[in-house]
Image 1 (tube, rainbow, N blue to C red):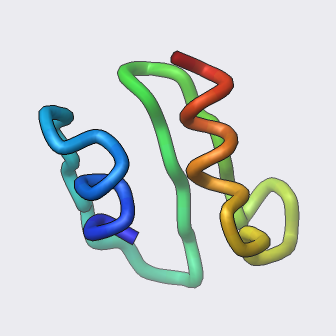
Image 2: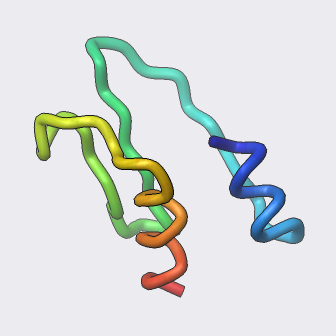
Length: 56
């Protein structure tokens, strides 16, 4: 995931924060874009990149 983000936006700062309990969340600045815990599912292929692109 981080590699795909860096490839698409090479100047962006990408931070990965380890968590437990099956939590996978993606935020842009202070805005939560995706939460596996809230949605109860994994992200679909390309979904995270599309969400970030829409938020920019």
